[in-house]
Amino acid sequence: MKKAKLLDIVATLKAIPIERLQLVEEDYNAIENLPTGQVGTIVDVYEQQEDYYLVEFADTQGCEYAMATFKADEILVLHYDLAIA
Image 1 (tube, rainbow, N blue to C red):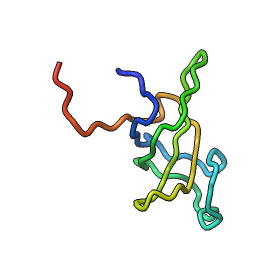
Image 2: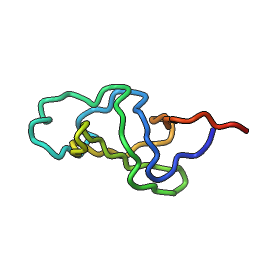
Image 3: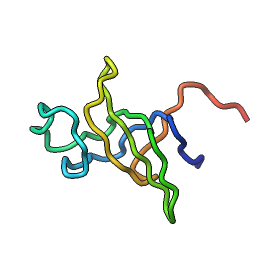
Image 4: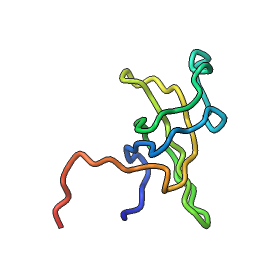
Protein backbone atom coordinates (compact mmCIF):
# COMPACT_ATOMS: atom_id res chain seq x y z
CA MET A 1 0.00 0.00 0.00
CA LYS A 2 1.27 3.46 -0.93
CA LYS A 3 2.23 5.75 1.95
CA ALA A 4 -0.07 8.72 2.62
CA LYS A 5 1.42 12.17 2.05
CA LEU A 6 0.81 15.82 2.82
CA LEU A 7 -2.49 17.17 1.38
CA ASP A 8 -3.90 13.71 0.57
CA ILE A 9 -7.67 13.46 0.99
CA VAL A 10 -8.55 10.69 3.44
CA ALA A 11 -11.56 9.07 5.11
CA THR A 12 -11.74 7.71 8.64
CA LEU A 13 -11.97 3.92 8.90
CA LYS A 14 -13.59 3.93 12.34
CA ALA A 15 -15.42 6.34 14.62
CA ILE A 16 -13.05 8.68 16.47
CA PRO A 17 -14.03 9.56 20.06
CA ILE A 18 -14.42 13.25 20.88
CA GLU A 19 -11.51 12.98 23.37
CA ARG A 20 -9.12 12.57 20.43
CA LEU A 21 -10.44 15.60 18.54
CA GLN A 22 -9.40 19.22 18.64
CA LEU A 23 -12.71 20.96 17.97
CA VAL A 24 -12.73 24.44 16.48
CA GLU A 25 -16.40 25.27 16.98
CA GLU A 26 -18.09 24.95 20.38
CA ASP A 27 -21.28 23.82 18.59
CA TYR A 28 -19.60 20.47 17.92
CA ASN A 29 -18.95 19.72 21.62
CA ALA A 30 -22.25 17.83 21.73
CA ILE A 31 -21.05 15.09 19.35
CA GLU A 32 -19.87 11.80 20.82
CA ASN A 33 -17.48 10.97 17.98
CA LEU A 34 -16.39 11.70 14.46
CA PRO A 35 -18.18 9.02 12.41
CA THR A 36 -16.65 6.39 10.16
CA GLY A 37 -16.16 7.70 6.62
CA GLN A 38 -15.65 11.34 7.57
CA VAL A 39 -13.48 13.03 4.91
CA GLY A 40 -10.49 15.22 5.76
CA THR A 41 -7.12 16.45 4.47
CA ILE A 42 -3.67 15.53 5.76
CA VAL A 43 -2.06 18.79 6.90
CA ASP A 44 1.06 17.38 8.60
CA VAL A 45 3.03 14.13 8.59
CA TYR A 46 4.95 13.00 11.66
CA GLU A 47 7.57 10.44 10.68
CA GLN A 48 8.65 8.50 13.75
CA GLN A 49 8.93 4.75 14.31
CA GLU A 50 5.37 4.68 13.01
CA ASP A 51 3.91 7.37 10.75
CA TYR A 52 1.23 9.64 12.19
CA TYR A 53 -0.91 12.08 10.23
CA LEU A 54 -2.57 15.30 11.36
CA VAL A 55 -5.90 15.49 9.55
CA GLU A 56 -8.10 18.56 9.26
CA PHE A 57 -11.85 18.19 8.80
CA ALA A 58 -13.84 21.00 7.15
CA ASP A 59 -17.41 21.53 5.97
CA THR A 60 -18.43 22.02 2.34
CA GLN A 61 -17.72 25.77 2.63
CA GLY A 62 -14.13 25.04 3.70
CA CYS A 63 -14.58 26.01 7.36
CA GLU A 64 -12.49 23.79 9.62
CA TYR A 65 -14.38 22.17 12.47
CA ALA A 66 -11.97 19.55 13.86
CA MET A 67 -8.46 18.12 13.75
CA ALA A 68 -7.05 14.81 14.95
CA THR A 69 -3.89 12.72 14.67
CA PHE A 70 -4.19 9.30 13.06
CA LYS A 71 -2.05 6.22 12.54
CA ALA A 72 -1.81 4.93 8.97
CA ASP A 73 -4.23 2.06 9.63
CA GLU A 74 -6.99 4.43 10.81
CA ILE A 75 -7.39 6.30 7.50
CA LEU A 76 -7.96 5.46 3.85
CA VAL A 77 -6.44 7.66 1.13
CA LEU A 78 -9.10 8.58 -1.45
CA HIS A 79 -8.34 8.71 -5.17
CA TYR A 80 -10.17 10.64 -7.86
CA ASP A 81 -8.25 9.29 -10.86
CA LEU A 82 -7.41 5.72 -11.80
CA ALA A 83 -3.64 5.18 -11.65
CA ILE A 84 -2.43 3.10 -14.58
CA ALA A 85 0.81 1.19 -14.02
